[in-house]
Image 1 (cartoon, rainbow, N blue to C red):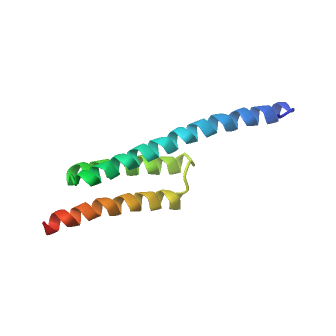
Image 2 (image 1 turned 90 degrees about the vertical axis):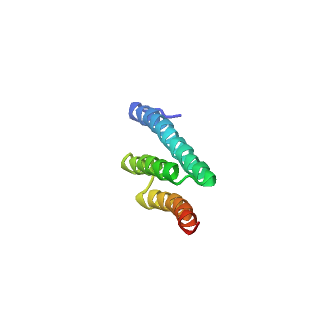
Image 3 (image 1 turned 180 degrees about the horizontal axis):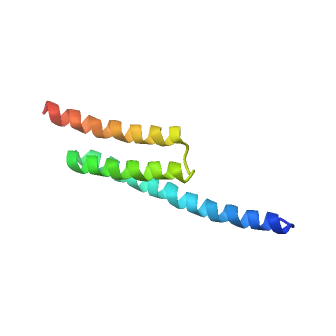
Length: 93
């Protein structure tokens, strides 16, 4: 365990940040799962709405330094690709 005052404070701060980061990552996973569920139900309007919400939360995580930009972009792209697949199946049907 840390002995100096500054080290003790730094440790406390790191624990707070870890909790905040974990909460944000959990939120990202939750909204990503919501998008995937809507994609399975093949409802295009709900899928687009869910994608927008998920994208917003993912990009907010970038501004909070929870995720790197490339990681966030990859996650958004993956979700967008799934929504796009519904769009194409609706267009062909």
